Amino acid sequence: MSRKVLILKGDHIGPEIVNEATKVLHRIDERFHLGLQFEEGLLGGAAYDAVGDPCPEATLEKARQSDAVLMGSVGGPEWDKVDRQLRPEKGLLKLRSGLGLFGNLRPAILYPQLAGASSLKPEIVSGLDILIVRELTGGIYFGEPRGIRVLENGEREGFNTYKYSESEIVRIGKLAFEAARVRNRRVCSVDKANVLEATILWREVMQVLASDYPDVELSHMYVDNAAMQLIKAPKQFDVIVTGNMFGDILSDAAAMLTGSIGMLPSASLDRNGKGLYEPCHGSAPDITGRGIANPLATILSAAMMLRYSLQAPDAAVAIEQAVSAVLDNGLRTSDIYTEGTRKVSTAEMGDAVVAAL
Ligand code: IPM
Ligand code: MG
Image 1 (cartoon, rainbow, N blue to C red):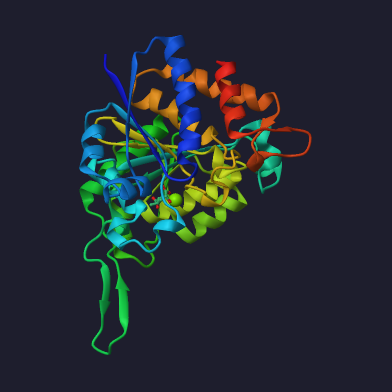
Image 2: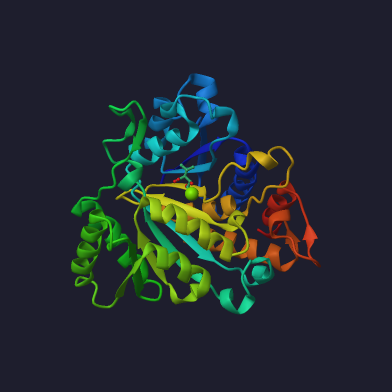
């Protein structure tokens, strides 16, 4: 079988963390004989600087011809002045949308070794295992019309459109219900149905869909309350399904429960299981080039890639176990460092995972 992987390093710490994930994948390939084939492409600010487009057609084409894409991170202050349409983030959005990657899976799992690094008390977070299913190619991120216009009185007005069609809601809902079936069979749909029509429909459609999944319990929560509950009693959640913007925000909050956003991987899937794999965190311009970024979110994203797009679940488990073993041995990048553990660099962390494999 073909297992073509496109590597998009992106900006700032992107290349640093992707290099470690690539080391891990080479080792995995050696051990499991997967026949992985790697190719590289440009995305984000790096692509803008090279060819004037944050998501060049060549990258989209390579992505279409790959079985999976592994990405680092995009963006940085040096592109703040670039035309809105050509910002690094736009490149990522174009890639997600161009590949039809509507289903974003963001697991927030607390490694028991990191309970002390969480900002919450250990008893609140120990055993935490939440899956956020975020809709990724619709909602206010993509709704038209959008823009900044000049009003009659001369002042400017920014505007966006929050919309979801029934079919968009159904396909993300199905993904969430299916995911819940192999977990604890509970889905919490997060909306703002007390205010926004788009989410009144969202709630209605989720309710109807639930009748196809009698074995899964569906509940609903307003997004403001969900933010509070995530901090207050996060273990009440199993699967959270929500729209693009709410999912963006809640997944950052969930990340902190696990000790560091540097631990959170993600998968973005199309209807055939092809996917883009990236850490949930950004490009961290403040720590670029210092060799201190945590590569584990990217390494764990590579594990998700093996599981969901490359049909190599054993290899995925091996990586996850290797990460756990390295944490057991007390190795920590600075974002997850606590007293009594050993602070290591990005490359040392990557090497330790490779060694554990
Ligand atoms: C994320 C990021 C992106 C998003 C940005 C970089 C466009 O915050 O993946 O969560 O908002 O989706
Ligand atoms: Mg985000």
